[in-house]
Image (cartoon, rainbow, N blue to C red):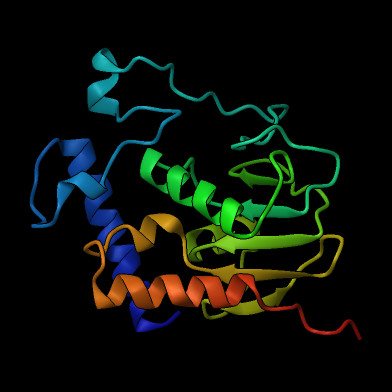
Length: 187
């Protein structure tokens, strides 16, 4: 684990604690922090229009598009994407010239077969490939068909930066470069 990973995990833990306690202790732009679209924070359950997700071993993976038998791209994320991150993923689909239904974002369940698997962020890497470690933009060996998954930044992470800032532009550039890379040759 790098120092940046430790800092980001600590930051995420602090934000989760803020959500649970209903207090604000971290100074940042709150418009970037929207609740997940498929669930609610525990303190806002009375105002939530959607029922909280129920963990079930038989539940299907959640996705932006219906999951075809073998999508071209499969994106793995540790939780449902916020509306802004979902919009960013739709722009990524358009930039990659993907047809509707040829890409999905999976947040739970087994990983189905796909031509290209992309792990969005370190928390998704820990969730879907416990023990695996690599830097954004790298390929990691997997037990799934295809053998490799690309690890890159989560859209949620990119949206934490100020719009148009150097940091955000650098993260977007790195994400795009990674998405256009090829997996290592199979041994």
